[in-house]
Length: 511
Image (tube, rainbow, N blue to C red; front, top):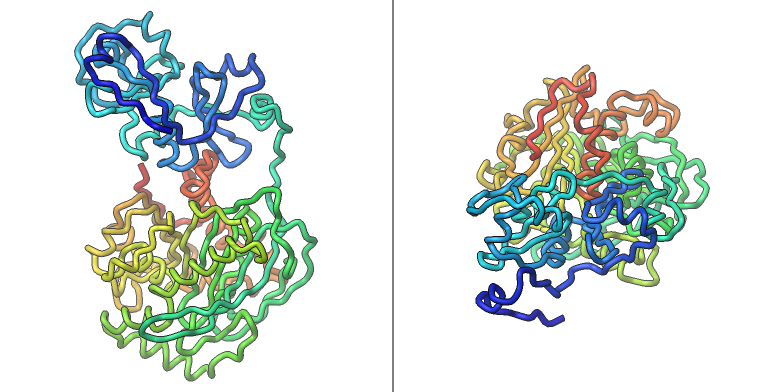
């Protein structure tokens, strides 16, 4: 819709407030007048769902979904109305720059509760007048608007939200039953040509699960089997789509099913998980049943990795179709999402994509997030990352500093402090620039704790998830982190604010 531009002089002469007519999101009509009158002007959070936030417009009996930080920023600005500096100065400041001079007018303020104002005599700075304390809060950049939304938001139950919209109250469906299947993609690289890459998928389903045996790797990276309960080749649950997508990148010489306890857990919590089998030099497992490489060849390959230099490792990432190959795998997955004949059709939230990985897979994730020296390989579709025992090598401190998305780094006990090249894994946490979390597992956890081998003492993956202390901590913190930064779930902070007894170190820098 066309925006109407009005000169400041005419604005000052004839109007106190001018509506902004560009809307970023559709208005949702509010049905229950009584509840609307209690909540108008507030930001509400669906605390029994995923913490979704809505702005209750104070004057139009409607509300607007706020979504991601950029969405919240756009909605708050587009629902804003112009105000002169003189009138803005009449409202007390709750947070933000207090540079305007003028007497506070509480009677005027009382008439503006819940309104979003734009400073039309300045640079269009946005302010929100919080009804509870009758003060204005600066919205600033998208993250500022998002923080205001979370800090000042009021939780509402599913039943009350249903009253607002005139719909049936939602029920919390978690945990979901888990479906599993594989799909093979053809991936091309201008230097190394084409290759076939199988990808394992886990996802929510309505289908009844059955016994399934994964042929994968154990704690010593030798071939092993693990029994689980999944619905093989079942359809994806449709009534709660779209789902966030988490790509899991395996460690050197393993395969996409190396950490089933984690992948299945994420799927049970409402994620689609995709884990490629990268064409490493001597894989010890395959999601589609390929014969593992001889063990002595595998050991030789690991020894060769210890001797490789930075240039060699950068090239190996490309040769193994990891960086930039994983970007092309994501392209192929999203193409299935767009295809009506695909099992993935219309099931992925393209704005909610995470990278995750163990060891070499963590290195893969960092490369895609911007740590790779070739900045054309950065994939901005990845919004967050969970890294298990990721190495610093081959990335420099300056390149790691360009990683600005939220990251969570989890490693084993003291014996896992250094990567295979002698670099402290925690340097990733020290140098990354975005919100970040560092967790060090105690109790003798090792680099191998993130493999399926941690589940070897248990009869099934489900038993391992319920009983193993390492698995519980890994799954709990990683899922809470993803829910906070992908799903904007206000309830995730409860888990992230606790320090489990198993954690030897827990640090975070997450404003």
